Length: 323
Image (cartoon, rainbow, N blue to C red):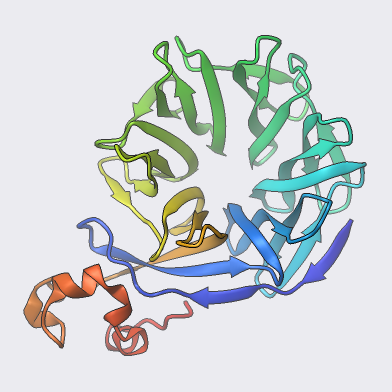
Protein backbone atom coordinates (compact mmCIF):
# COMPACT_ATOMS: atom_id res chain seq x y z
CA UNK A 1 0.00 0.00 0.00
CA UNK A 2 1.49 3.30 -1.10
CA UNK A 3 0.45 6.91 -0.62
CA UNK A 4 2.25 10.20 -0.98
CA UNK A 5 2.88 12.38 2.05
CA UNK A 6 4.72 15.59 2.79
CA UNK A 7 7.74 15.86 5.06
CA UNK A 8 8.81 18.74 7.23
CA UNK A 9 12.50 19.51 6.84
CA UNK A 10 14.32 21.72 9.30
CA UNK A 11 17.99 22.66 9.14
CA UNK A 12 19.63 22.61 12.55
CA UNK A 13 22.58 24.71 13.68
CA UNK A 14 26.05 23.77 12.51
CA UNK A 15 27.49 21.24 14.90
CA UNK A 16 31.25 21.10 15.38
CA UNK A 17 32.33 17.51 15.88
CA UNK A 18 35.66 15.93 16.76
CA UNK A 19 38.76 17.69 15.48
CA UNK A 20 38.42 16.82 11.81
CA UNK A 21 38.18 19.45 9.07
CA UNK A 22 34.84 18.03 7.88
CA UNK A 23 31.88 19.53 9.74
CA UNK A 24 28.19 18.71 9.39
CA UNK A 25 24.86 20.40 9.01
CA UNK A 26 21.82 18.42 10.11
CA UNK A 27 18.40 18.25 8.48
CA UNK A 28 15.54 16.88 10.58
CA UNK A 29 12.95 14.62 8.92
CA UNK A 30 9.47 14.49 10.45
CA UNK A 31 6.21 13.59 8.66
CA UNK A 32 3.19 15.69 9.78
CA UNK A 33 1.71 14.23 12.94
CA UNK A 34 4.63 11.91 13.51
CA UNK A 35 5.64 11.20 17.09
CA UNK A 36 8.49 8.87 16.14
CA UNK A 37 10.61 8.99 12.96
CA UNK A 38 13.67 6.96 11.98
CA UNK A 39 15.84 7.28 8.86
CA UNK A 40 17.58 3.95 8.23
CA UNK A 41 18.97 3.77 4.74
CA UNK A 42 20.20 6.02 1.94
CA UNK A 43 21.23 5.54 -1.69
CA UNK A 44 22.10 8.77 -3.48
CA UNK A 45 19.22 11.16 -2.81
CA UNK A 46 16.81 8.39 -1.79
CA UNK A 47 16.10 7.75 1.89
CA UNK A 48 14.07 5.02 3.60
CA UNK A 49 12.85 4.62 7.17
CA UNK A 50 9.76 4.41 9.33
CA UNK A 51 7.50 6.64 11.39
CA UNK A 52 4.56 6.40 13.81
CA UNK A 53 1.54 8.67 14.20
CA UNK A 54 -0.10 9.47 17.55
CA UNK A 55 -3.27 7.49 18.20
CA UNK A 56 -2.70 5.02 15.35
CA UNK A 57 -3.38 1.33 16.00
CA UNK A 58 -1.27 0.31 13.02
CA UNK A 59 2.16 0.74 14.57
CA UNK A 60 4.84 2.07 12.25
CA UNK A 61 4.70 2.91 8.55
CA UNK A 62 7.54 2.66 6.08
CA UNK A 63 8.46 5.59 3.87
CA UNK A 64 10.72 6.22 0.90
CA UNK A 65 11.81 9.77 0.14
CA UNK A 66 13.00 10.41 -3.41
CA UNK A 67 14.19 13.98 -3.79
CA UNK A 68 10.88 15.84 -4.12
CA UNK A 69 8.32 13.23 -3.10
CA UNK A 70 7.85 10.97 -0.11
CA UNK A 71 5.73 7.83 -0.39
CA UNK A 72 4.22 5.70 2.34
CA UNK A 73 5.17 2.02 1.87
CA UNK A 74 3.44 -0.70 3.93
CA UNK A 75 3.41 -4.42 3.18
CA UNK A 76 0.04 -5.59 1.82
CA UNK A 77 -0.27 -8.46 4.26
CA UNK A 78 -2.08 -8.15 7.58
CA UNK A 79 0.46 -6.52 9.84
CA UNK A 80 1.02 -4.27 12.82
CA UNK A 81 3.95 -2.29 11.54
CA UNK A 82 6.32 -1.87 8.60
CA UNK A 83 9.88 -0.53 8.69
CA UNK A 84 12.13 0.12 5.70
CA UNK A 85 15.83 -0.34 6.43
CA UNK A 86 17.85 -0.53 3.21
CA UNK A 87 17.78 0.71 -0.38
CA UNK A 88 19.81 -0.03 -3.50
CA UNK A 89 18.48 1.49 -6.73
CA UNK A 90 14.79 0.58 -6.92
CA UNK A 91 15.13 -2.32 -4.48
CA UNK A 92 14.12 -1.78 -0.86
CA UNK A 93 14.33 -4.15 2.10
CA UNK A 94 12.72 -4.00 5.49
CA UNK A 95 10.73 -5.95 8.05
CA UNK A 96 7.15 -6.17 9.26
CA UNK A 97 5.16 -7.67 12.10
CA UNK A 98 2.28 -9.97 11.26
CA UNK A 99 -1.04 -10.32 13.08
CA UNK A 100 0.31 -13.12 15.28
CA UNK A 101 3.42 -11.36 16.52
CA UNK A 102 5.81 -12.88 14.01
CA UNK A 103 8.59 -10.72 12.54
CA UNK A 104 9.52 -11.14 8.87
CA UNK A 105 11.80 -9.53 6.33
CA UNK A 106 10.72 -8.46 2.86
CA UNK A 107 12.02 -7.21 -0.47
CA UNK A 108 10.11 -4.54 -2.42
CA UNK A 109 11.10 -3.89 -6.06
CA UNK A 110 8.86 -0.87 -6.54
CA UNK A 111 5.92 -3.01 -7.64
CA UNK A 112 5.88 -6.34 -5.81
CA UNK A 113 6.65 -7.51 -2.27
CA UNK A 114 8.47 -10.76 -1.49
CA UNK A 115 8.68 -12.27 2.00
CA UNK A 116 12.12 -13.08 3.40
CA UNK A 117 12.41 -15.70 6.14
CA UNK A 118 15.75 -17.34 6.92
CA UNK A 119 15.29 -21.14 6.93
CA UNK A 120 16.69 -21.43 10.46
CA UNK A 121 14.53 -18.66 11.92
CA UNK A 122 12.01 -19.16 14.72
CA UNK A 123 9.33 -16.54 14.04
CA UNK A 124 11.86 -13.72 13.58
CA UNK A 125 13.80 -12.57 10.48
CA UNK A 126 15.01 -9.00 9.94
CA UNK A 127 16.24 -7.85 6.52
CA UNK A 128 18.55 -4.88 7.13
CA UNK A 129 20.43 -3.87 3.98
CA UNK A 130 20.85 -4.56 0.28
CA UNK A 131 23.63 -4.04 -2.25
CA UNK A 132 22.84 -5.08 -5.80
CA UNK A 133 21.04 -8.41 -5.40
CA UNK A 134 22.59 -9.33 -2.05
CA UNK A 135 20.67 -8.87 1.19
CA UNK A 136 21.98 -9.11 4.75
CA UNK A 137 20.14 -9.32 8.05
CA UNK A 138 19.68 -11.55 11.05
CA UNK A 139 17.30 -14.09 12.56
CA UNK A 140 16.44 -15.56 15.96
CA UNK A 141 17.03 -19.25 16.62
CA UNK A 142 15.25 -21.70 18.93
CA UNK A 143 17.46 -20.70 21.87
CA UNK A 144 16.64 -16.98 21.46
CA UNK A 145 20.08 -16.06 20.13
CA UNK A 146 20.51 -14.03 16.96
CA UNK A 147 22.56 -14.99 13.91
CA UNK A 148 23.22 -13.24 10.62
CA UNK A 149 22.56 -14.33 7.08
CA UNK A 150 23.56 -13.36 3.56
CA UNK A 151 20.92 -13.94 0.87
CA UNK A 152 21.90 -13.81 -2.81
CA UNK A 153 18.37 -13.95 -4.19
CA UNK A 154 18.31 -17.73 -4.25
CA UNK A 155 20.13 -19.13 -1.24
CA UNK A 156 20.51 -18.11 2.41
CA UNK A 157 24.01 -18.44 3.87
CA UNK A 158 24.77 -18.32 7.61
CA UNK A 159 27.11 -15.50 8.55
CA UNK A 160 28.47 -15.16 12.10
CA UNK A 161 31.57 -13.55 13.57
CA UNK A 162 33.77 -16.45 14.77
CA UNK A 163 33.48 -16.96 18.54
CA UNK A 164 30.44 -14.70 18.90
CA UNK A 165 27.24 -15.65 20.72
CA UNK A 166 25.14 -13.21 18.64
CA UNK A 167 25.81 -11.54 15.29
CA UNK A 168 23.80 -8.83 13.53
CA UNK A 169 24.73 -8.01 9.92
CA UNK A 170 23.44 -4.46 9.45
CA UNK A 171 25.02 -3.00 6.32
CA UNK A 172 26.55 -4.09 3.02
CA UNK A 173 28.43 -2.49 0.12
CA UNK A 174 29.58 -4.91 -2.59
CA UNK A 175 31.42 -7.68 -0.67
CA UNK A 176 31.95 -5.56 2.46
CA UNK A 177 29.64 -6.14 5.42
CA UNK A 178 29.35 -4.31 8.74
CA UNK A 179 27.38 -5.04 11.87
CA UNK A 180 27.74 -5.93 15.52
CA UNK A 181 28.32 -9.00 17.65
CA UNK A 182 28.38 -10.02 21.30
CA UNK A 183 31.39 -11.84 22.69
CA UNK A 184 31.37 -14.57 25.34
CA UNK A 185 31.23 -11.87 28.02
CA UNK A 186 28.07 -10.38 26.42
CA UNK A 187 29.93 -7.21 25.39
CA UNK A 188 28.82 -5.70 22.05
CA UNK A 189 31.40 -4.79 19.39
CA UNK A 190 31.14 -3.50 15.85
CA UNK A 191 32.67 -5.47 13.01
CA UNK A 192 33.85 -4.96 9.46
CA UNK A 193 34.09 -7.88 7.02
CA UNK A 194 36.10 -7.21 3.85
CA UNK A 195 35.06 -10.33 1.96
CA UNK A 196 37.74 -12.49 3.53
CA UNK A 197 38.36 -11.52 7.15
CA UNK A 198 36.74 -9.78 10.12
CA UNK A 199 37.93 -6.67 11.94
CA UNK A 200 36.54 -5.63 15.32
CA UNK A 201 35.48 -1.99 15.70
CA UNK A 202 35.39 -0.40 19.16
CA UNK A 203 34.92 3.34 19.58
CA UNK A 204 37.36 4.82 22.13
CA UNK A 205 35.93 4.75 25.65
CA UNK A 206 32.78 2.93 24.52
CA UNK A 207 31.06 0.22 26.54
CA UNK A 208 29.35 -1.01 23.34
CA UNK A 209 29.82 -0.30 19.62
CA UNK A 210 27.43 -1.00 16.72
CA UNK A 211 28.32 -0.57 13.02
CA UNK A 212 25.33 -0.03 10.72
CA UNK A 213 26.28 1.39 7.33
CA UNK A 214 29.22 1.45 4.94
CA UNK A 215 30.23 3.45 1.86
CA UNK A 216 33.77 3.12 0.54
CA UNK A 217 36.14 3.30 3.50
CA UNK A 218 33.61 5.08 5.75
CA UNK A 219 31.54 3.21 8.32
CA UNK A 220 28.75 4.73 10.42
CA UNK A 221 27.01 3.49 13.53
CA UNK A 222 26.58 4.24 17.20
CA UNK A 223 28.37 3.65 20.47
CA UNK A 224 27.40 3.76 24.15
CA UNK A 225 29.55 5.79 26.52
CA UNK A 226 30.29 5.22 30.22
CA UNK A 227 27.15 7.19 31.16
CA UNK A 228 24.99 4.89 29.02
CA UNK A 229 24.41 7.62 26.41
CA UNK A 230 24.32 6.62 22.74
CA UNK A 231 26.21 8.68 20.16
CA UNK A 232 26.36 8.51 16.36
CA UNK A 233 29.78 8.07 14.76
CA UNK A 234 31.60 7.87 11.47
CA UNK A 235 34.77 5.76 11.23
CA UNK A 236 37.13 6.71 8.42
CA UNK A 237 39.26 3.58 8.64
CA UNK A 238 41.70 5.41 10.88
CA UNK A 239 39.66 7.33 13.47
CA UNK A 240 36.21 7.70 14.98
CA UNK A 241 34.33 11.02 14.89
CA UNK A 242 31.14 11.66 16.88
CA UNK A 243 28.29 13.18 14.83
CA UNK A 244 25.43 14.01 17.20
CA UNK A 245 22.71 16.45 16.04
CA UNK A 246 22.45 19.60 18.19
CA UNK A 247 20.16 19.06 21.18
CA UNK A 248 20.25 15.27 20.94
CA UNK A 249 20.08 13.26 24.14
CA UNK A 250 20.74 10.04 22.18
CA UNK A 251 21.86 9.65 18.56
CA UNK A 252 22.25 6.77 16.13
CA UNK A 253 23.73 6.79 12.59
CA UNK A 254 22.17 4.11 10.40
CA UNK A 255 23.23 4.57 6.78
CA UNK A 256 25.67 6.37 4.51
CA UNK A 257 25.82 7.10 0.78
CA UNK A 258 28.72 9.13 -0.53
CA UNK A 259 29.30 11.60 2.26
CA UNK A 260 25.68 11.93 3.44
CA UNK A 261 24.60 10.13 6.60
CA UNK A 262 21.12 9.25 7.87
CA UNK A 263 19.94 8.14 11.29
CA UNK A 264 17.77 9.20 14.17
CA UNK A 265 18.04 11.03 17.46
CA UNK A 266 16.01 11.66 20.60
CA UNK A 267 15.61 15.28 21.68
CA UNK A 268 15.41 16.65 25.23
CA UNK A 269 11.67 16.03 25.43
CA UNK A 270 12.06 12.38 24.44
CA UNK A 271 10.70 12.75 20.87
CA UNK A 272 12.48 10.77 18.16
CA UNK A 273 13.37 12.41 14.83
CA UNK A 274 15.08 11.24 11.68
CA UNK A 275 18.07 13.20 10.40
CA UNK A 276 20.35 13.68 7.43
CA UNK A 277 23.90 14.86 8.17
CA UNK A 278 25.67 16.59 5.29
CA UNK A 279 29.35 17.53 5.56
CA UNK A 280 31.19 20.55 4.34
CA UNK A 281 34.94 21.16 4.46
CA UNK A 282 36.27 24.31 6.05
CA UNK A 283 38.61 26.34 3.82
CA UNK A 284 42.29 25.69 4.36
CA UNK A 285 42.91 29.16 5.74
CA UNK A 286 40.19 28.76 8.37
CA UNK A 287 42.02 27.76 11.54
CA UNK A 288 39.85 27.10 14.62
CA UNK A 289 41.11 29.96 16.76
CA UNK A 290 39.25 32.76 18.54
CA UNK A 291 40.48 35.37 16.08
CA UNK A 292 38.71 33.69 13.15
CA UNK A 293 35.19 34.02 14.53
CA UNK A 294 33.58 37.40 14.96
CA UNK A 295 32.42 37.80 18.54
CA UNK A 296 35.43 36.13 20.05
CA UNK A 297 35.21 32.96 22.05
CA UNK A 298 35.11 29.92 19.74
CA UNK A 299 34.78 27.60 22.73
CA UNK A 300 31.61 29.44 23.74
CA UNK A 301 30.18 29.08 20.22
CA UNK A 302 30.88 25.36 20.18
CA UNK A 303 29.23 24.94 23.57
CA UNK A 304 26.25 27.04 22.42
CA UNK A 305 25.81 26.44 18.66
CA UNK A 306 22.62 28.50 18.62
CA UNK A 307 24.79 31.61 18.98
CA UNK A 308 26.12 31.12 15.44
CA UNK A 309 24.27 33.01 12.68
CA UNK A 310 23.95 30.07 10.27
CA UNK A 311 22.97 32.13 7.20
CA UNK A 312 25.94 34.46 7.65
CA UNK A 313 28.30 31.59 8.45
CA UNK A 314 27.24 29.63 5.36
CA UNK A 315 27.46 32.66 3.08
CA UNK A 316 30.93 33.53 4.32
CA UNK A 317 32.22 30.04 3.59
CA UNK A 318 30.44 29.32 0.30
CA UNK A 319 27.67 26.93 1.35
CA UNK A 320 23.97 27.46 1.88
CA UNK A 321 22.27 25.85 4.85
CA UNK A 322 19.83 23.98 2.62
CA UNK A 323 22.51 21.96 0.87
